[in-house]
Amino acid sequence: QAVSRRTERVASAVPIQMMMAFRMRSGYATRRLEPGVVDLTFGDPHELAPDAYVEALADALRPRDELWFAYMQSDEAAQAAAAASLERVVPLGWGPDDLRMTTGGFGAITVAFKVLADPGEEVVYNLPPWFLYEPLALEAGLVPVKVRARLPSFDLDLDAIAAALTERTRIVVVNTPNNPTGRIYPPETLEALAAILERASDRWGRRIWIVSDEPYNRIVFSGSTFHSPAQFYRHTLVCYSYGKTLLAPGQRLGYLAVPPTLPERAELLAAVDLMQIAAGWLFPNAVMQHAVPALERLAFDVPALEAKRDHVVSTLRAMGYELDVPQGTFYLWVRSPVADDEAFVGDLSGRGVLVMPGALFETPGWFRICLTATADSLEAAMPHLDAAIRAARV
Ligand code: PLP
Image 1 (cartoon, helix red, strand yellow):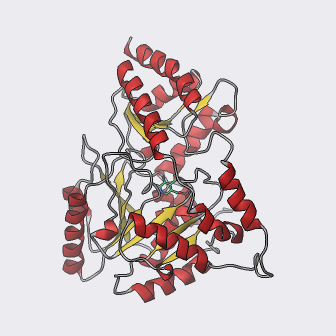
Image 2: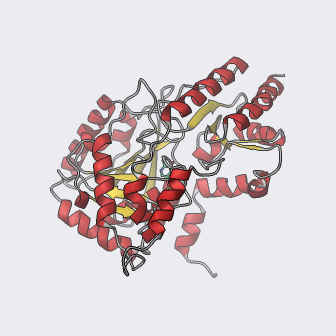
Image 3: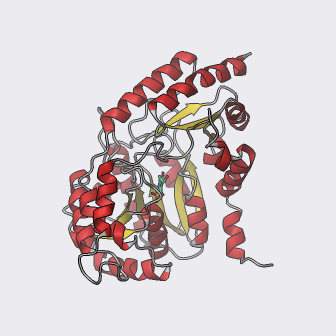
């Protein structure tokens, strides 16, 4: 056999299997570009990037010194701009040396898994999840332990999480605002989770960490407030990606932040520095890092997204779809009108509207719509969504 057992283990991950099937069945790569097809699957841009974004990159491309494009680990100026920005969202007294720039959220989560846990240890996360936790965990040799969110709110099910903890649990991943449900976990939930993890860590004499995956922590709608688990549990590593707020996920940029209040801070940061190299130089390109101070000045237009959210939610509800109003992110999590979400998504695809089946999130009976499409494309998708639910009800 040509490939390692590790590769085979990663390939066996449920979401990887589903993703392959999804891409093959719908011929996604070519289908998304066909005229008349509306792509509401991934959080990709659907319009040319704004001038301010392009100018920030163009400016960062112009070398100021001979080391401008030299091998660059995490850059201090980038860290300083990112820390100041994080402080506005999660006020914990972050300084430049509390975080390390990474190749997006992927890089941050990869490094967090590798520095915190040993092969064979367990990582707990909630269903429906961002579908790539499983392959990242398997690649790190970890055992995924999945806990279903509490229905109908899709909040964390604290009893189920407590019951899932064992002496092998090393990490609990918390993703708020949540992809795909759009749920923001309330402070009481995070506080109670922290108490559960303190008790469990004491019981087994082994620290259980939170990996707080929060790439949507700036995409929070009016009436909701975001709290990071790091504000309640200091043994938390914060993972962030610029791919969402800048809507340019192909330009890899993010960070991993180690709370300034953490007693093991110095040890952790040294481990992160080492692992970013050893795991394959998981630092963003020099140009992206030079651009961070300018990129941090760009604002995501939350009110515009919120208006889009409100319009699409009310239109879908009027058609008879069941869905909650998301508190954050750019996704809608919609109940499939038929139990077989894959069949429904297939039907929608036949009508020229591409969405993601709940099965991909290990939560059959639902599907996800991404709102990063233009208002015109979303409008064009509406008659098809209407026809599909009517057809499903016959
Ligand atoms: N975490 C969550 C919850 C996500 O939704 C995503 C991307 O969709 C990521 C992490 C990875 O982000 P990036 O591709 O910007 O690294």
